[in-house]
Each structure stands twice: as structure tokens, then as C-alpha cells.
Image (cartoon, rainbow, N blue to C red; front, top):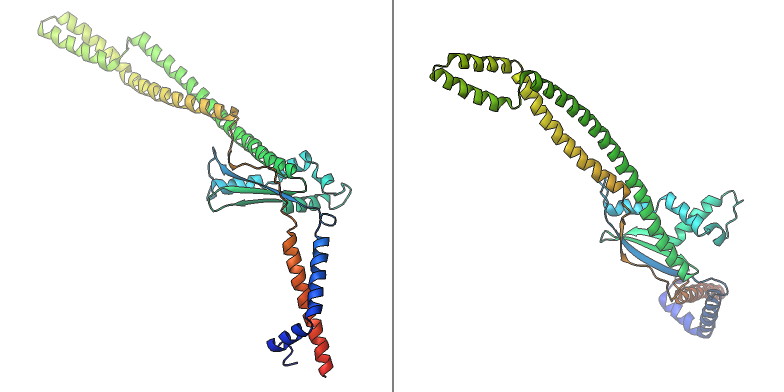
Length: 314
């Protein structure tokens, strides 16, 4: 048995049995060609598409492409595909089968491939017995992806719009309260612009004193004293009102933007390569099956013949 796999000996055996090896190769090739033909293996056609995520934001450490990968491969989209294309019946899986869903998912995953490319696009490939059906399935996956993201983003922006609207109402109520307080001070103390009024009254007071108009000066002083009682409060309220109005304007912009985004029907997938019905089958690869069958048959035949030759020598 030391020389069982000796290369020289094997070459001698191959040459001795060359006609038999030739016949075995022809038979293996013919049988492989026969059993890989449409009579035994139904051919499948492949349709492909490449997508690039748009109008989305990345979360945590995930890229936009990784998020697209998760959503496109989610069970929600798979369920849509099961129903839309009646894949249970199409794949010959009976609904009363206790493992119906498991088998359906396994079959779907076998025929539908989703992966991220090195260029951050997502590639979807579908194998099916019907080329048009394979192309239609990819189109449907893209549509369901857009619909799912619209729902996700719609819900998100509706929540943002509601929060902004609630905050806006609070600011409007605060503005109303501050405005009422300012109007009350204006009515009771005659303050419209405290800083400007004090400046003008002080100027008038100085001029009245310089002119020796004591009565006028006393009247102006009385006005200044009266205004000083609520002047500080008026200034605080005025500053608060300005800040509240700025906040209110910001919230209005935020509310309008969120509401608009919640109602938008935009696309979240840029189709870089569109799917189309293939005109050539992708499975089975008959030449590869034939090659492997011939190689396997020849190797097996060689082993059998070597055993026979070795038995004769013993």
C-alpha cells in the first residue's frame, strides 16, 4: 500500500484503462447534462438592483446603508412580499404545514439576497423561475422600503410637530400674560418706553430747573418718581416678552417644518441600477455541473481501479 498513490503508478493505470476512463467521462458528462436539464431542474433567472439611501439620517454608529440593509431585510417587508406574490403557494408550501412560516422564510432567504457593497450601496438580487417575476419582486421590495420609511418618518415628525405645537401654545399663553401685565403698567403709570421716557423727562427736568421753572420741575420729578415705581418691572417684562416672541417664532418654524415632513411622500432610495427581466438563466450552471460530475466520476473510477490492481498484485 506504500505505492498506492504513487504518481507514476497512477499514470500507468490511467494509460492502461484509458478507454474505460474515456467511456466513464462520456457517460458522466451525458448523465450530468441530462439531469441538469430543464426536465429535472427548473431553471432560475436572476434580477438585480443597486440602491443608495437618501433623505435619511444615521443613528448611533450605523451608516445609512446599514440602516437600509436592516429595513429591506426586515420581517415586515418579507410579510408584504409573502402576501403580494403568494409565495407560499408559489413555492409549494402548504399552509397547514406546522413549519409553514419557517420553510417560507428559508425559501425566501434562499432566493432573495440583500447585501451592502464596498461603495455603500445596497444590492438586491432575486432568483426566480420567471424572469419578469424576479424583476417585479425587486421593484416591490423598493416600494415597500419607501412605504416603511414614510411611516417611520411620518410618525417621528408628527410627534415632533405635536411637541412643537404644545410648546408653542405654552409660549403664546405666556406672551398673553406678559402682554396683559405690560398693558396694565402702561395704563396705570403711563410707561411706554421706560428708558426713552426717563431720558427725555430727565432732560426736561434739567431744562426746567435751569430756567427757574420750579413748578414744572416738580411736576416732572413727580412723574419720574411715579414711573420709577414700576420701571424696573416694566423693563423685565419687556425683555421677557422679546425672548418669548423669539422662542415662539422658532417654535413656529419647527412646527411647520415637522408638519411638512410628516406629510411628504418622498423617496428614500436612489436606484443606481434598475432591475430588469433576465434573458439568460443563472441556475443551474450546466457546464460546471458537468465538469464536477466528470471529475468526480474519474476520481472514483481511478480509486476503484487502483484497488483492483492492488488486489491482483497481492
